[in-house]
Image 1 (tube, helix red, strand yellow):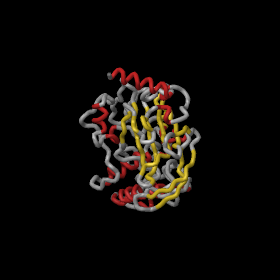
Image 2 (cartoon, rainbow, N blue to C red; image 1 turned 90 degrees about the horizontal axis):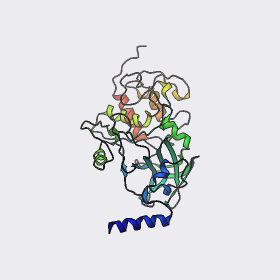
Image 3 (cartoon, one colour; image 1 turned 90 degrees about the vertical axis):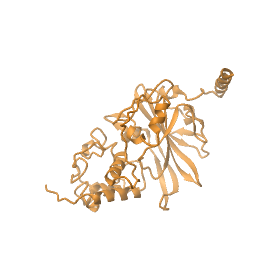
Image 4 (cartoon, helix red, strand yellow; image 1 turned 135 degrees about the horizontal axis):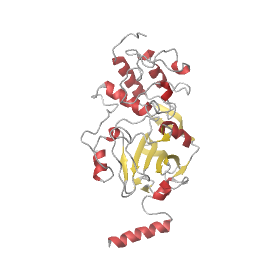
Length: 339
C-alpha cells in the first residue's frame, strides 16, 4: 500500500510538472529559478508548510531588520549532514539551502514580503532574493532588488511608514562576504543553541555531532543576563559580519565579534580610521561611561545613509537595541583616555 501511495505521489508531481519534495536540481544547477515555488521548499506556499528535511530555526539574538518578522529554514539533501563547529557557521554540504522570509503582521496575520535564499552550489554559496505577490501564493525572483511601501507598528506602539528595501543580489554579498567569499552568517551553534534546536537537528540525522559544551549566546532582551553579554551579542549579530578582520569593514580596525578581547579593537577609546560625517563631532568609537561621546551610538541612532550603521537593511532605528547599547556604555567604568 505504501509503495502504491508513493508511486501515486510521484505521478501526481509529474503531472504538475515539478518533482516531488524539494527540487535539488534547482539548488545546485546554474541559473536563477523564476519562482520560489520552483524549489519545492514548501508543500503549501500560502501557509509555508515545510517539505521534508526543511527544518525551521530561529536565533537567540537575531539581526534587526526594520522590525520585520522572519521565518528561517535550513534544508539538507537526503543522506547529508551538517558538520558541527563551535565557532564558525555549521559546515553545510553542497545542495544545502538557507531560506529566510521577511514580513509583517497585518491584521494579526503574517504577510510575507520577500524571501532570500542562500544556495550551496559546487562553485560556492549563491544568494538570490524573491518578492512575494500580493496574494501570498508565490514569490518571483528579483535579482535587481526593489522597494516596497510598508506600514507597521513597532513594539512600543509607534507607527511607521517606510520604503522597505529588498537588496539586490550584489548587496547580499556586502553582509555575507567573508574574505571575498559568500558565506552564511546566522547558522552558528551559539545562535541555535536554545529551545532544543541543535538536539532536534542531531535527532533528525541532520547534524554529525553535538558536544555537551556547545557554546551559547545571550538573548539581547533577557534582562536576567549580564548587560555586557547581551550588548555584545546584539553587536555581533548586527555588526560583526562586516566588522571582523576578514569582513567588508576590516579596514576600520573595529571588530565586534564575541571572540574579540582587545579593548581598543572592540572600540574602547579607539579613534576612527577615517574621520567624516560618520563620526559627527565625536573622537572615539566608544567612550566608557559616556554614550553621548561615543561614535558607535551616534551611528546607531541615525537613519542618514551617510551616517547610519549598519549601512544596509534598515530604514528605522532599533530603539530597544540603542537603549541596550546605551546602558552597556553607561555601565562601563569611566577611565580617562591616556593617549
